[in-house]
Image (tube, rainbow, N blue to C red; front, side, top):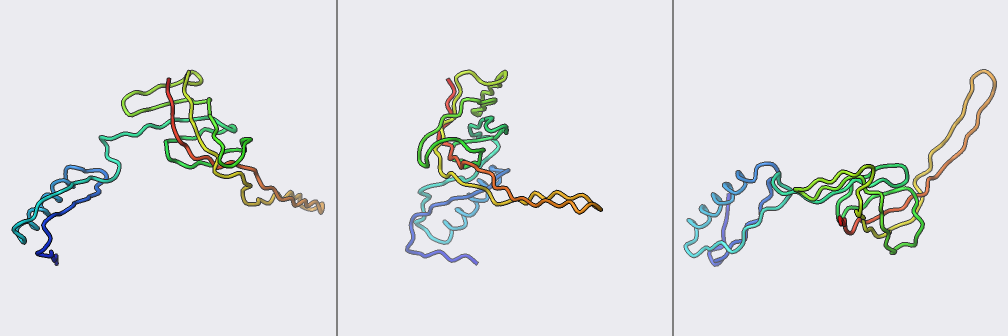
Length: 162
């Protein structure tokens, strides 16, 4: 059941269909025609499609830091091995292995020349405790130790490719 206020003269459609945008457009236009049949003076003001579609690609990069590789894109928050710096300060990561900006792909050998990732330190903290327990049977050998690894939480601001 669909109820439309007869006083309403403008409509704003926002749809999200991840894999089949053409079907989403058709269903939104069907909805608009049904609504316009109910009220005489209805006009479409704005039409938006939300979500990531197969046709639209975002920029991303693969960066190596702390002995690990991370796939990052602007706006993403990642946890890496501890990097010196205060919370709120900016950091540049230079060891970029791969950059894709939608149409162009740049692969470094081993790193991409001139590529940088600008990030902001959000948090300096330690991860949750893990227990290291050594045990040998029949000889009463037991050792229990705890360990908390330091990490830095980064917010990726920008990917630069010169």
